[in-house]
Amino acid sequence: MEFVSPLRSVKFGLRISGYRIEVLRDLLFELVKKDLKVRYRRSVIGFLWTMLQPLLMMGVMYIVFSEVFRFNISNYPVYALVGILFWNFFSQSVISAMNSLRFNSGIIQKMPVPPWIFPVSSVISGTINLGLSFIPLAIILLLTGHKPTIYLFFLPISIIIITIFTLGVGLILSPLAVFFYDVTELVGVLLILLMYITPTFYPMSIVPPKFFWIVYLNPLRSMLEVFRDPIYLGKIPPTSHLSASIALGILSMLIGVYIFKTQSRKIAFHL
Amino acid sequence: MGIPIVELKRVSLKYRLARQKTPTFKEYMIHWIKGVLVYEDLWALRDVSLELYKGDMIGIVGRNGAGKSTLLKVIAKILNPTSGECIVRGRVSPLLELGIGFDMELSGYENIYLAGLFLGHTKKEIATKIDEIVEFAELEYFINSPVRNYSSGMVARLGFAIATAWRPEILIVDEILSVGDLAFGKKCIERIKEFRSQGTTILLVSHAGNIVEELCNKAVWLEKGIVYAAGDTEEVIEKYYNFIKSITNEECRREAIFARQAL
Image (cartoon, rainbow over all chains, first blue to last red; front, side, top):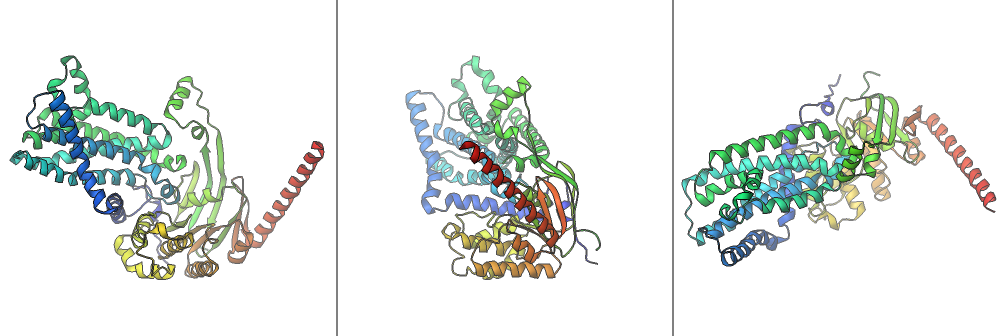
């Protein structure tokens, strides 16, 4: 009597359709590789462009904010560039994770693949892109003579925290984008709003006190400070920001995983 | 007969159509607040009970919208039934479309890995089969060029070769045997027959009754999500053909009456 494993009917946590762990690991790896390959395939230009884009953006911010508005902040290029890199990571990862289910609708409708693999791989490739963008950052650090401190070693922890938060947001938004077509546009507008109320390229000192509460309520501010402090200030981020961003990361992941667990069976119906 | 490899117990599946008509968050909230969130239900499968055994080759026939593809998706665990139970005892290889999981920008070689992973195999397992896949797909000269340069026949060949590189316990084939040229179609059918002789259960959907008649030992006729007949191929196909004939006669008559009235 041949033993037939009931592989496909295994239901365990997020392993909805019983893919083996090794297969999911390989699949995740391969999807991230594909993402990066497709992004950089068109040879050197594509790669150079992703390096150049934040630098150009930083140049614009530099001219606008230190020449036109004249606010006083030491080594503004580094301050702005770190903010831009953070923002690019967050917004690009959220947008690509949010759209990932719809882009892969063909596969989700024809294969029993667990849908969460798509937003997860989007955010992981976003994190790798963030890692690659440290090349232009290193150049600017060298050019401006910015001396990194020992606390730069804290940066990987910062990256893990912001990645977890971003992943949670992606997991929350991607099923919503499948169920409602206007979520993508809504989030696009929200991201622009969020960018302006996050001190990515302006210092907190120019914010009028009556608007402090907006900045304090903005969850992304803590994330940004956690990411920026080890590089720009050369210190470990203050406990207030650290605990806030860890809590937000855990919260967003809990909501995201909950939404996925309850909604993922409906995704194939709505695509 | 032993234990059935696929067991469907009173499986029903409903699609909710309301959301597809109001797919924006704004409208949803408006309707929700007004309390007029009414769904129009479409039952794609109603009380379908089936038992499929090892080595069976089952043809599923029925008109468009009868629920054939939905049934396959339930067995492949892509869609969950609204009620009832679907027990599958074995690895399913769903061939609902050829070339699933391909990225047009990547080469054929890279796509073998991608599609193989989606089918549930590790990279190591794929590496041992890669030469075999390329050979079966007859793509030795093109395997390193991007799939966007492939013809649709080449994509279909590669897709079929990957999906059937490992013998599954259950193979699901949805209207795909018509793609590719005749010679390759023959090769596909040969492979399917070979799997069957080794004990694979095969589910085949086709509009063409003759393919089902030729290959399958059992058939299921679905109409509006209900199993109208199931059993020996000849009996089921005969009933199905009679039904089609009666329907077309009915439609001809109705059209004739309509035309006369119009005159």
